[in-house]
Length: 373
Image 1: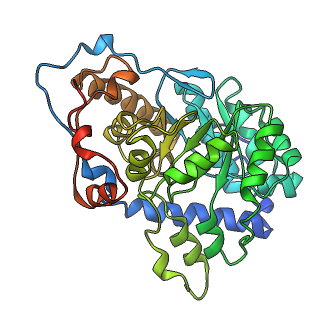
Image 2: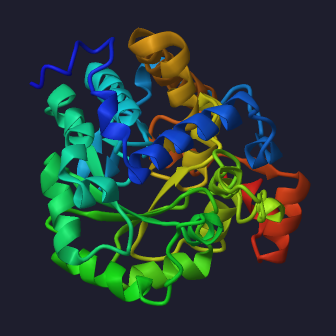
């Protein structure tokens, strides 16, 4: 281990790593994302309510929170989703997130590894995840602009169990230095899926995957998607904040909410041959359970866990993950759900703007309110 690394509670990476535009951008993202988390407010998860049935609850000891993701069995149906990497600060955060993941058995994704593919000196800011969590389930992360060979390199860099391909045209459009050539992305995704030695998840970055997009991805051979909708960290706002001219101020709140993306992907029938993950705007265990009840196999959490880590340290994050685990089990018990599958039989009310949008997109909301049989 490098002499610039300390234990899991202190800084591990030399700040000199940040003397390049890639690392500076990563630090900007961390700072601006934390600022959004501090201002977190109502989102579409609040348009969803469970119908309470007093005598349908089951014993908490009988509840099984296990789920299957990318061919692996997870004990918990939520995970630390993609955040960062590629700078000294990002490397420190990844080391601490991995420490918490290892202590709790939670799966974890890194942020985009493009910086490390371009600059070998940044590789340790990602591989620190495996150093601190050698046995956990880890997602590698690239975008559709890389070659299949680079995608495989990213997987091998981490000894990853699966690969996230992030699709982020909105972020790229607003980013001053962003890519603008989107037309080749479907073909590139298909090529990466064919070359990758591990399962591939295609993930939005907070703007939602529409049903036609999920259907297209299924036709390209993708087996799992993370719908990652609006409601959490907004990368249009972040990239606009990095621009001196703030030219794209009107892009705030672009896209589909996480709830709307789940509703359209599963109703009137689920898109065949593809599994759903959900992230974007997840603030509590109740949000986790709502997403699971709408068809997600597991739920990714980024902003809340990052804010907990920066405010309370690794120990605080470990405690929070344990609290969420207990509360997810308690909520499933109240809903009469012994397993993840049972959550799909819960009655749910959709109200507000989400109801208006879902109705326009053909979702049968009354049926969702009468699922218990």
